[in-house]
Image (tube, rainbow, N blue to C red; front, side, top):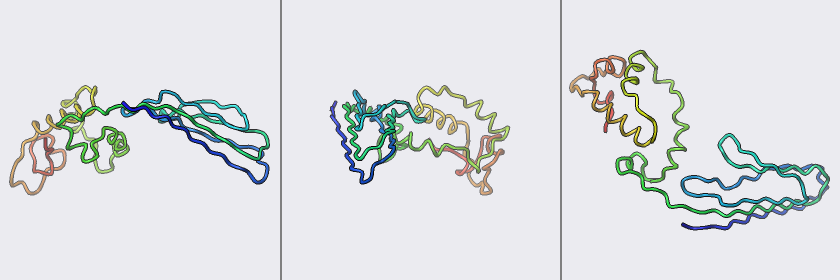
Amino acid sequence: MNFYSIRHLRASAIRSHQREHHGDAHAPRSDLNQHCLTFSLSVSPRCRVFSYRDHQGNTVQHFDIPNEHNQLVIVAESVVEQQVLPDVPAFCRRCVGRAGRLDRGRRLLGDAAASTFAVETPAVKLLAAQMALPADDPLMLVQELNQRLFDYFKYVPGNARGLADRRAIISGEGVCQDLPTP
């Protein structure tokens, strides 16, 4: 494990007297790779600083200087412990790709929005109910679901018309475009 002491200093001279100034400072985030042990923020001229968590779980320090001032000094200090990332399970390495980092999945979650191309039909709902899995570990869930889908569908060569619709789901058969790969 590595420990880092971080000090960020911002000093600004203001040409004309500023009547009010407000801003935000974000504490380093604690996640799989790092843990923020301490964070402090000092602002000059002195003002009230309050803390809150934003919609993504970040700790935010907000300040507001309501009086006239001609300079601003902000000092943010933190101590961060960098942790060793756990190994990605072998069966998931090709899914994670070259990045090889678990946090890549979080960035890709934005792609999990509803699709305009996929339509939820009674056949899809029935198949989803048959494939229902506990969602304890997302990586294991994806691997298990993919294996179950692979086992469910049968490849039928020579079916050039394709069954990429409810018929593939109902029959459990299709061409390569219809079937997942393990």
